[in-house]
Image (cartoon, rainbow, N blue to C red; front, side, top):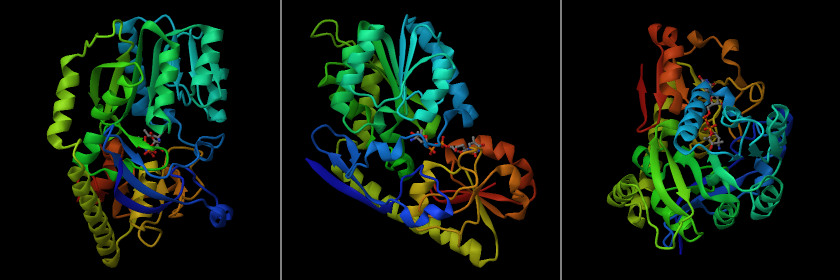
Length: 395
Ligand code: JHZ
């Protein structure tokens, strides 16, 4: 039932920033995207082994993007207020910006990247350095009992086997507990042409439509959706165990989301073929714009060494001939090179932005934050470039 609709070419691991000595050994895979006619799920065709991606060197730490720290604080406060959980488990706890809002005694973290699980362990939380599986849920249940709140942000769409994932949640969730998870929204990606959300770490891109099908077949009921602006548009999904088999207490906004997706054509393969054409057009326009700027003798840098920009630079074949340098606030990315394209990454403080005429926004999702920080650049005639929702320059 899998139908392929997009071929983004050869790609490296999106977050595997590397040193010059590592260039010759770099791992690449074919990034193709398909749609399942049955569940309506969008997935990449060839999954990359998770151990290659999520290991002790994984560099993306949420706490480096300060708007996300605020986001997780307010999310935690909201969940406490609405559900008053006595016990909390976070799947994919990263360096702890969500779990830190809950008390240590009744909270458990699961995180496969040892560098981060060590951090939450040092903060005093029970931390399991592990991938999320039914087997692990059994172990946690025997040590800590069932959980009232199971939470995951930008993590469930990272897991290949979704049936096992949801079965594991079902196993550990208390009978009146709630499972809450947020991931980028397929609908927003289709609307905005933000194909750069597709990379090895995102083997699935979720629609509410597909999640409704997948949760149901694993004994969970999707009962609420919050549409969020983070990461270019995400959905926060709420699911629970149906208390009685016929229980179908969905809030009206679930139906509204399903309706909006249907009217956009999320359940129709034609929509994906149109998206693929838009992606090819975006590449042509971005490369065309960058080349024109360079041919005019101007200089371009980039802000945000994101996983998303790995997809853009490799799909569009953009390297140092077009972009001189990328700046990023993450210490572990600085001094390294971007995956595949091998553009050097530096700290923002070490680059004089006024030497540049254009800044390509690798972190376009933080457009306002970055534009606000870089007011001097704009006042001096500098311009930003983005490809979302269309390729454009602005100041
Ligand atoms: P950001 C990651 O994707 C990977 P990325 C992951 N797979 C996922 O699912 C999504 O997040 C949600 C830097 N920065 O959040 C910090 C600045 O330099 O868009 C980060 O390295 N200056 C887990 O990598 C990067 O940009 C700034 O002013 O696409 C942002 O990465 C700000 C605000 C950030 O996620």
